[in-house]
Image (cartoon, rainbow, N blue to C red):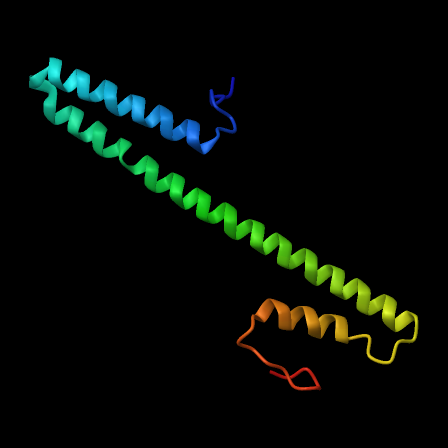
Length: 116
């Protein structure tokens, strides 16, 4: 039988909450069993990684969302260019140039032929 994680898709705030509770438990255990203090320090150090990992997950989620939006906008511009070409518009690639310029940001300027 395969292992099933008890929290298959945890909310990150819940993860941080469980981490805080674990820290409090470890602190209590460390005070009650002073002879195991070195062991508890190792466990505490491992728990301190959780907020760093949560921050990285949040950063990656944001980056993925931006990339998905960028990709969707490019696909929409490609489709618009194809439809414009089929409809006989004089400059069907303008949709792609505009989208690429928008994604490049305000610092990038393009010439009339689309070159940067």
